[in-house]
Image 1 (tube, rainbow, N blue to C red):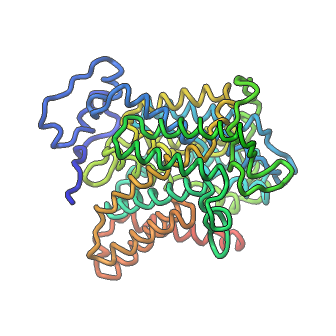
Image 2 (spheres, rainbow, N blue to C red):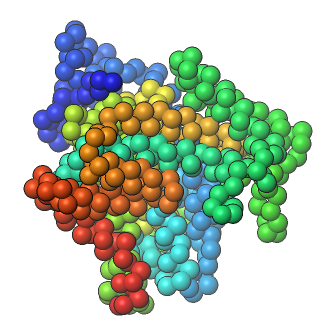
Image 3 (cartoon, one colour):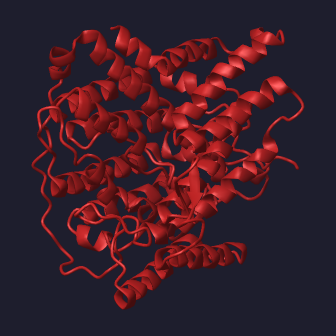
Length: 505
């Protein structure tokens, strides 16, 4: 199948709003009449130039928000454990500040980056942070290391290194990354809905091998409804699916009184709602608690565990942050047809800079590193193509600070169908992979397989890069490997051997 037309290559970073139009117009599209922007907003974001409309951008921004709003509730759950000193982070404050930082950084991404990427606390990264806090560091100390990691990545962006790494990855691996993230999103959606769960020997299907319980039925209804809307090409299919499924969930909960899967007393109801119980809240508005902002110790971690051990933690967080963004930007850009023929994102420097600043901002606000979210693909699948969608998503996150009770109405079972559908859309990129050279097939396969099976974009990218460098060299094609790929491969070898290194030092 012929590859879809791509935006023109050879563009430079830091262009004017008018440059956005030139950068995102593919050769085939440019043959038609030039689209004139209708107003200043259109001109700045390049809405008409990317063949989008204001309505699509607003709808895409709404879809992205509802798909990733769960982080406002999930992040404080992950960061609610005790650190090595016995201290805990206040739940309400983490929820409010999570929404605040996500809102500010997503708006900044829209205005500066001008792409439909949304940011929030990275789930993979905050899980790492929670482990270190429970075993080695206090919350202020681990957040200080997150700030340092964000500042380090910012330096790498300003020096051009991060963009150079992004462009050094070969098209075969970039395509594999997009496909792998498609499967990863599907796994996330199925896990959020409870269709797949930890079991014996690895994962199990539903409850005792059956799709039992009302929440799973709600997910199935939502998935089928959204699928029908998508194949019928209904505008706003994903957003409509989320809203309608949420309404169904509220009605089901009101009638059946199901309750949460995990009770406050530690009891587990396999047939309960996975995260949020879809019931109308007692109050809609609540004042945000922002007391944890600035509660970090920049060098406290070095004093507690030593310089080398602290640097290894910074390195592990940096690698995860660095390559999660590479994968996300590649996958979302591919879904929106925003990449050039080398599978690079035109004018990527501002995007990478905002993402790097967000990492430091998340640490400084005590809610862990913020990063570009793969759930942005849901908004792109619903029509978003420009930074205006990100501005919409960011404003909704800021409102979520005050409407946290309302945000909690949307259960994960209602948002999960959108993730599964987006996963199906993204794996269509598999048609662009080369299948006649095993030195290319095996790295692509490892990248695709390890993302969903290890629940980590970084692990998939790392396995793909290390095996690519090794196998291309093994068949005498080592000279074709970009020099930076060798550097990245060595760094990933260190990353995968991090635990033995930490024990050694």
